[in-house]
Every structure is written in C-alpha cells, then in structure tokens.
Length: 122
Image (cartoon, rainbow, N blue to C red):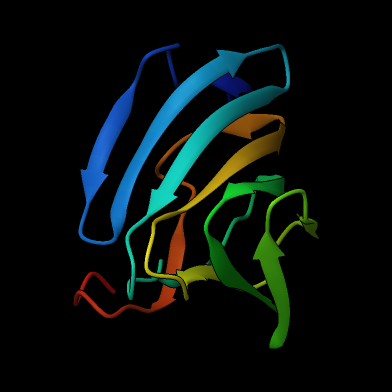
C-alpha cells in the first residue's frame, strides 16, 4: 500500500453540509478547517487508515463517536480512533467550525466509509 497524503495545501471542497479546506500537510498528518452549516451534519462514517482529532473554534455542535455524544464548542477537543464511527453536527444558529488533524500512513479523501448519510451518499 502506498503511504502518504494525497492532499495539497489549499485543497477545498463544498459539501451538502458545509466546506473543508486543507491548511497544512506533514509527513503523517493533514490539518483541515471544517465548517458545518447550522442544522447540518456529516455522514456517519469511519476510516481504515487514519485517526482524527477535532478542536472546535466557533459555533456549537455535537461529535458522535462510536455512539457517544460529545459537546463541541470553543476549545473542546475530541479524539477519533482508527475505525471509530463518527460524525459532527451543528446545533447552533451559526456554523460550527473545527480544526481536524488527521494522523496516519495513508491520508486520502477516499478513506471514508459512509454508514448513513442525510444526503444519500452511502
């Protein structure tokens, strides 16, 4: 298996729930800024090749990790182990913004296994 990151600094994408933007890349990490719009949520998913750490920087939301809900608001951090099911949702009237640090040997947008999704992307 090839290791490394398939991201480039500045990569970004518009999703049905909001946006992501790559801020930094290292040997075994990628840093993204994630914006989740009010009332929206990411798919329930897991990753085979990476773990993640989310740190909230504005707004308010919920991080669901292996069925347990954690509050996400300014300064709160959650760790998402390899293969743990997870999703983030925005529960405030302003977007939830968090910094995502991905760690692993293979960092690629294709390492998303969706279990359920509000936007029919499973």
